[in-house]
Length: 301
Picture 1 (tube, rainbow, N blue to C red):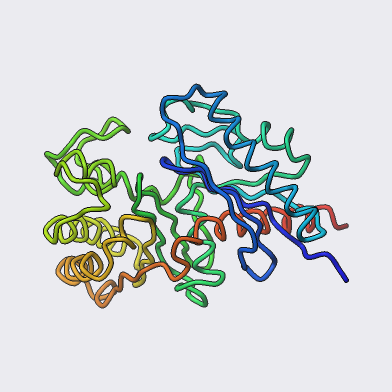
Picture 2 (cartoon, rainbow, N blue to C red):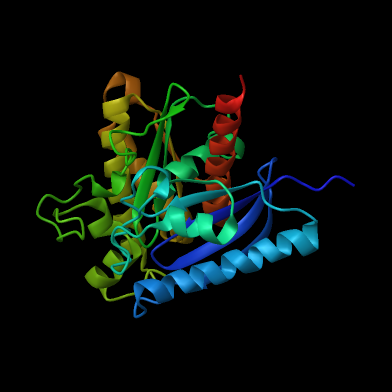
């Protein structure tokens, strides 16, 4: 029996690290995670991540008879290209953390990485709600707010690889100070920690008003991107958005309808990311497969 081709997929979030195995069809076949200990040192955080990476590599060998072909990473940002270093705003210990070299040392595999929102965009375009769509936005509303944009079938990179950071679109001009240094950013107003700071309630216990306000703010930011880039689809994932459910999405769509008045953006839709909670790991795998394919094609004479 032929061993399956697998990617070791890694999702770096502000609340948890997740690691999984994803096959060429975009199916998640193994998964593990550990919560981010915000009281730990930089090296202790790395040890937590390395532990589940090594355990997942072992399961690949013993349960699936395979060695992963590549490592794919989706990380909260900012990041440098291919996650040579990462500086997640919600993980203060990791500023300029050399993630890629650390992962290469532990796994012995090629490592490719993107921001978590960009990874989700690849996943939703591959096997999710944007399959077959050439122009769309994908975003995560969770501990942080990230995004990725596909235009004319190509994932936008930007000058440093951080294009699509919709979390730092200003939605409340006189709003809260953001960890990025700005004020009134979507992340400072609609992320999980922001909701708790503003309302005194954890995002797992929202009121109707909290869900509506969060949805409207996200819709406001999405409308700006749709008007700017001629988009008609936004796929939204993350624990806050998906946890708030229909109330959130109805409020976001209402804001979108009100603010996308220009003809080419009219009828823009905001929908739940189809891949749900597995989206970040499938996205990380998509980053890995894309990187491996490019490496193979470049090496072919």
